[in-house]
Image (tube, rainbow, N blue to C red; front, side, top):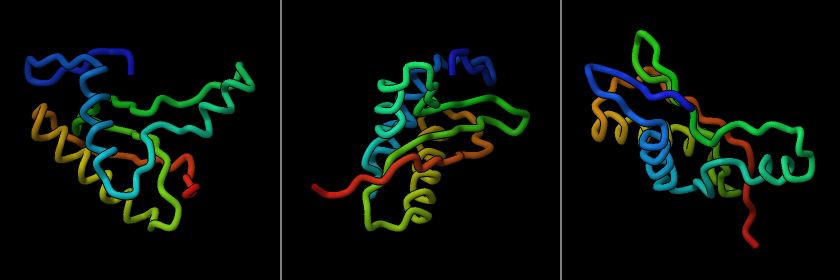
Length: 115
């Protein structure tokens, strides 16, 4: 997500949307982290490995298409966490920025176990 997003004469820097999505997702019970600690660790071991950004967004004819990668807490319902993240991100982006949201794709990259 490197380009400014535009809608209705409003430009939004990628970092702004990333911050809104990250805060919304972190606020969901069962989310351990936004971004994948597993993939980050692997990229340190194998420098040529490319890891996905924690948050991505693209503008389509229907509105923003948002993707968010996260780690979840062990023992929780992954589909329920994903549904809650989708709703939290949708609500946050819609209310704070006013952009239409076409979809929120949630990628669970890891599970964190209690130590």
